Image (cartoon, rainbow, N blue to C red):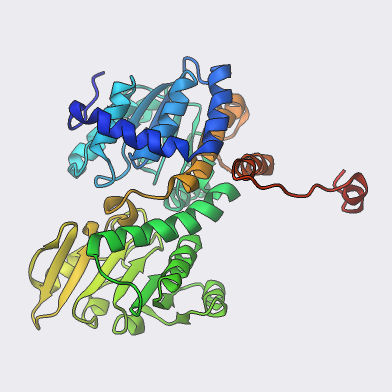
Length: 413
């Protein structure tokens, strides 16, 4: 089936981007060489629905070189990079993705990818899985199982598992240590601020930054905001995470109080209606609203539209909403993932770990899939240890090893 992309002539620019990140992804390179040599995915179809930028493209190429028929689509209308999509098509992969597509187009691309009847899916956020459980059950014909990249998607999967309605095994790649401890914390922490600063061209130093949610992503964003010189406020619903934020040196308060204090708001909860009308009514003139959760539901855009007397493009990727009293509230990247919709996503060295986990998760499914129940699985600890060891070695670090006597003392043998 013919690919659907914006412009085939952009391939050369996309190839440069992919070549750049490949150089900084030694762990995936190492794993990829073995998978290629073994032709691990020969005659298997893999559908990848992850934010389509250079690092994702390189993961797709690793699977392609390992023998897979790889079909790629995006997982967010604003995160696809058209030149990267073109580069993959030039390499012989099938791609259904365009930047700034409509919601109708977005789901048509997902359906087109599922038309290939995958053996393995690599999902990001759960939209592929949702379709496979509703309107596209026919696409389960050859399905062994899949992997999920992000926290939101894992939450959706565990909901299906709890209901007893999950119809095939899924690997929660997000829940591997080498994914969430690094990707969610250091990746989100850096790339979110990269997206905000690049889009606004404003300082962070001296401003009051409100971080909604103190999970691993929130921890990373708060840490980076502090490093940039911001005064950080954290909002939480979990008392344990709130105590942790306090012990980490941050102010903690409800959003209704933070709303009148903040200059920049970043939501990272995975839930809806984190910032609503009652909060917006208290906000200062010129505030910036950004979301780093998977879906554009954390900042209530309907409330913002209802409050505004007019709205206009304040700057590329910033919609400015003027309220009746003249205050302006600025929404970045339509409330979508700011690090990808207004930036290039996580650094290559971080995604090196995440996508190494994804490649090994796909291999695990291939070898173990027929023996797995329709549940959500986390990869064995040995997988994390192997990924971390390769990464450390590539960075030039060495660590100690336990002696036989030490292992015996700890009952490890």
